[in-house]
Length: 601
Image (cartoon, rainbow, N blue to C red; front, side):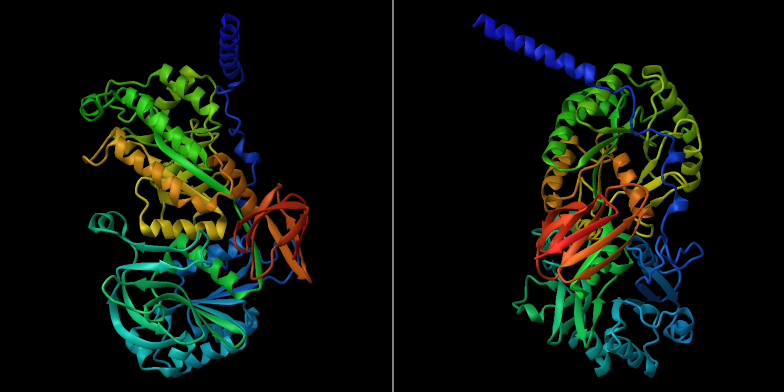
């Protein structure tokens, strides 16, 4: 027995010694000279501005997307971004008349899809509906973002026929929730309806008031409103997103402002494209990020409030409450973990960061294969430049030479962020995590050598529209970035901002709302950055002959990833790459060579 105990003790000590010796926490492998990474100037741009690159790598005929509407409208920005991400060409026109005048000259008379901002269409013109009908008859798919007034639709039989509307039941109705059907956005079927008033106040942020349209025969609904006080057959429920077939093409209708959101619009366009074709294959990022912002905090601050709330100091709460809960949530997920360090919250008090705590977390995070970034958080009025100098002095005094590769911008102005990225402290930062802005692209470049990746969801709250947005971005990009900002627990603004409450919600949300995306890979934000650069710079062509899809890929680095959505059939085998099933008829393709052959059975 004594011998066995000695062996166990030896193995335990040896394991700890091995972990310490292999734990390379004092260097950051992600921190490289960012000038050698794929830059902004190498991005494929399918947009219609001055930066358009019309032919990319191959001299090929690309799918053309036409946008009709105001040049500064959010729908145009979404359509422009989606076209660039899918390596298509786009041409924008302010009116149908302008398009008619220029389509021969611009060679855009046969686009694959036409996205129309309904608010910018003159529906009183007699020729308008006839022109739209002609486009559909010629095989052009139409996408309507929003609709004209219900009274306009109600008075026009031809417009009803074009849109697939049988009846205008009410010019405005209020529903209890929304039913998103399976097979459109990735992630499956869901009903966005609060079970009680408390959940309604916390999570219900979808559009619940809109005209009540019932659909004609031959249409297909993707999202409808639901009631709690009306006993209706499914076909009588008010339609929100649907498709109407007209000859060789489809008319897609979004009854609301969903296309105006930078993330949601991407997913809707990808889903509509997939619904129109026998198959589609398009590039994606394949990155699932869990970001814990402003953690760990290393200074013994806000002591009175911490003792009152947790009976522990800040450092004790961070280590003994937060750390085990964060690790548990991370290990139950398939995401990668990145923690954005907040050395101090208040730079004007006398509480300074603790070196021993910093070393403790650097070791523990390294063991979890997590990334350590830096946060721009400060609750004091200390200028950002001075805050970063203080942070740099502390880091250099604890781990000399350590460089951060990622930065959480924490609502900085564009000028502040630009100046910070050009400074010495952030010279190795290659990617910036930003809060979600529905008007900006989901991913892109902050500067020539630094990328930007948006948070998609607040992991503490996760509203209904955030869930819709998550499904949309996963559909378009196989990407997510879920944020848990720990300053709510460290510097609470209300009694509800307790660590126990917010971390419990975070763990539950991570486990449930991302369950359908486990086929996608977990990444740190710097690993995600590498994939974003390759995604933006790569180009591809694809063709199908009989049961084989031929994919040709050109880009700075391999592998790169694609989503394949099949109308029917399954994958038999893949050469030049590998594949995973995401859900029914949807596959993640990893391209490892310049040519990939996908055989379908």
